[in-house]
Image (cartoon, rainbow over all chains, first blue to last red):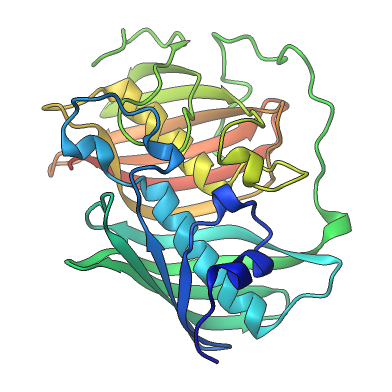
Length: 177
Length: 145
């Protein structure tokens, strides 16, 4: 199999259009590797809050979105390798040793390469990197996703209002997880 | 330091640089040698351009936004240096334990240790406001472009 255009990416991923952080799949080899493209554009919502007159470093594309975009490429690879049954969903649960060498900026084309490293029942491990024209900007030792029956996922609780923890004392609320 | 080192929570400012959301509502910092302890909390919302799309019909706070919340809280606590914000350089480990939904509070506590290369190492735990562990992560940040 070779590439996929945006309509097919949108069909594969469950995200709404604003959160689909891929523009094209250039090459997809199920079970092996995916190469995906994401154009960073200055009209993306993450730039809406940047005031006029700031230096270029204010426009560094957020690392969290670089990671999300790579994770979506990995999700496309997995969902085309072993599509889960309709009642099961793919969840990103862990990452290890991801390095962000330098930022991308509007006008850069992110090229993700994600490789399927390891599979076991209900879980998949992916590694890879992201690059722009000037070289690699991020490397990922391992991202882990699991397949879970949709019915076993935690669902929104009815939140207590206000929070039981007073704002000046988080000791009871926040510990190492 | 841009925050008084009192350990008391103060309202966090939204990031001045590109960010997918203002991921930290309140933040506090206290000295814990050899570094600092940063605490913060955020009310999970369902609005905003990204959150409404993750996912249509059922908003789940993206795992990468938990990472964003920790980096923003530590960056706000320690402040900019030479006009540069604190940025994620390495994600040593991230473990997402339970999803967060609109209405939940994300409560984070981070132990922040300065390194000789002028980076900081962050070990953070995140819980939902009822104490349920939501995430654990270790990362390195530095002030750079």
